[in-house]
Image 1 (cartoon, one colour):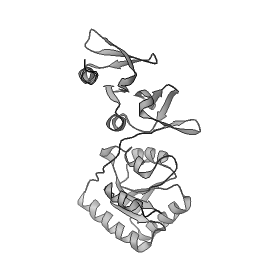
Image 2 (image 1 turned 90 degrees about the horizontal axis):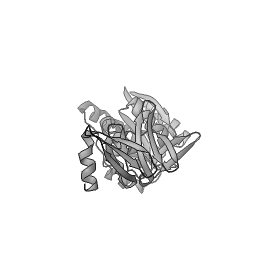
Image 3 (image 1 turned 135 degrees about the vertical axis):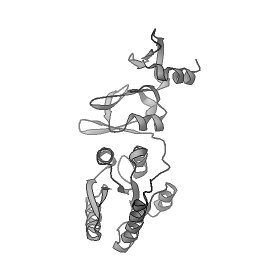
Image 4 (image 1 turned 180 degrees about the horizontal axis):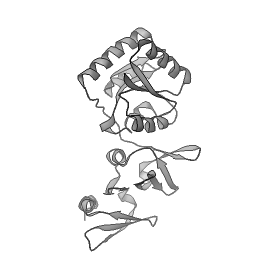
Length: 236
């Protein structure tokens, strides 16, 4: 059974694709997600082998979702779209395949054959992913999209990953690893990333570590491991 997630903002499209996959057989649909925010959490928790991913969705596109998944758990991706102009873009992103809506059983069968062959071969997916220019954050009953340039710092604790900016602190499903790699935020501690443009002062400590004071007045730890790279970035 191939562990599979379906991501599409249209309920009918999700149900139709799930029914087609059940008829073909060999797929364990571990989740059916209505939006990319929900899908990020599911992919990190369930670690599926395959994702059927709609391209055009509210708030975030399928391409943006792809850039928010850690490479070491990246599933194979089949794009599903009602818009043919996205087909070429899908292949430029090195997608496994793409399907046009409404999905036809014969066309899906060819895609399934390709999927099974690649999984049997142990092929690991690798995609060209764009930089993240909107960090999805969850606050109460709404989703806030934060520009990385507006972020002061990001930190992780037992409750998750938190993005701090002038408007406050917000929870995100994205990992520190992804945010470090794709936003330009700099690692200063194993649990902290900082926007260097928001640094006001750096205090060097006797133990070889340091402390950052931000423009908002927050104080962030700098471990000895990351102090050198921070100094190099700032030209110190």
